[in-house]
Image: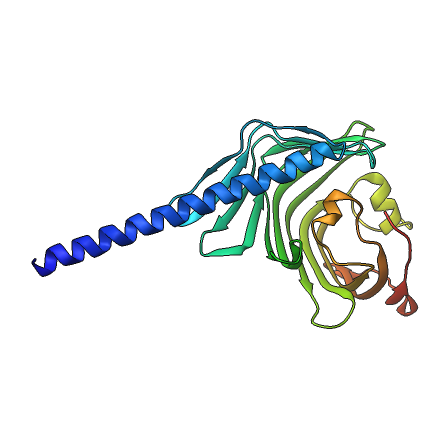
Length: 259
């Protein structure tokens, strides 16, 4: 057998083996997503979606959820996001990119918010064997518009939010948010600027803080309740041109309570 034929056989065998591995991984991904949705349905949620679809061969798992609607009757929160997508590199399953569709709806017990965005996606690094506990996340936002049925609207031109778990006891995370072209809702602007000194559109906003929580951010944050904030250490809160006045005594503030 010539060397060319040997290499062709080896390459063909490797492609066949990788195809089987990818297929097994894609089936496992679909089953995990379907299992979680079915589990939410069994727990009393309202769950609607078309068939779970996974593509991306040969190096990625791209799982799309057409017609997705999730509603938790116990908290009153609901999400309608037709075409919500999860992406993973097949060789790095602990990193998941969550991509929201250009238009979706978020409902709370008090209002319904229509959301449109040119980009709304988050890269999540998780511990798969620790109930998908969050290690680090990076969320990117572009051309975000929100409109509530209560009459308010808000806009963010660009934003980047980083969350990194701290390597220390307790569930503490470094938080950083950089946003530009922020037009907050009237109530939010009044809270940030009771003296009425800020413009309707804030050019740049930056937040840096360390936040502690009662438990880790993992899948239970979706399934049951959000982890309660136990501590906030505010390092920086500013807009371009002037720092927002932050009382030094509030830079390390303790807060309790659960959502």
